[in-house]
Length: 86
Image 1 (cartoon, rainbow, N blue to C red):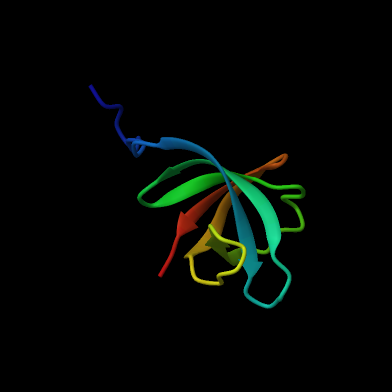
Image 2: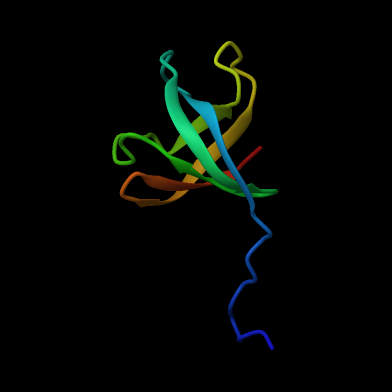
């Protein structure tokens, strides 16, 4: 039985793959690790969550700027939760 007011979590796929962050107002790519992912977002491990901008593009190849646009939803230490946005 579901608790009232509690959202069910999306099925997450454990990924553990290398990826890059491309901030909207910056040319430098930043490395990260995709810990897990689902249809609406992902959990990332980064060097410094505090210095990460609120919006960026997550790319899976260093040579490409094409990827998934993301918005930060939460930050805990080196972990960051992101939502995929249009």
